[in-house]
Image (cartoon, rainbow, N blue to C red; front, side, top):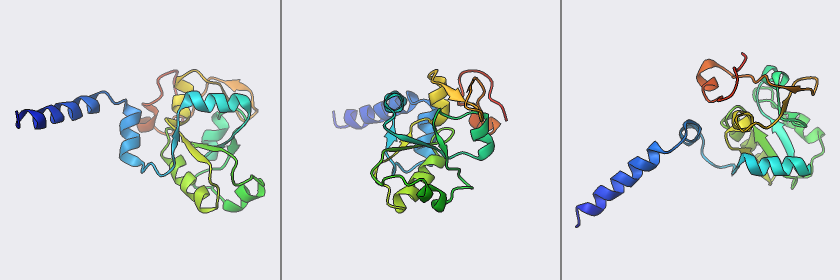
Length: 166
């Protein structure tokens, strides 16, 4: 019996690892979880109520191909705390940061936290998950689009619908 318990534990851990999606595995590998995740369905509800600020933390060329409607560009390499402060956002405003799947956005979320923003959430699976679940994206003219920037071929494998652009 004493040998059975460790064996069952190993089996359970192995099974749980197999049941994880590729995005789950990537986020566990690259993120710390310092910025809490928000699931897409909750983010959609907040978006519909217009009760949250979405910040796109990808490169400008990615944002211009498509972004979540109403999202503001914050950038990653281009991130500038002065531009964020110029938006005059109340420090308690709910902010959802996102990138392709949620790795770069966590880093920007940490920077926002250091600036004093205290209600920050990282969109789980990023814009790829948003798009995979058939939620709308818009182009640089704020017109609905089916285009989605895949970042690169390695990360684009997480896009399940359509063909990502580069």
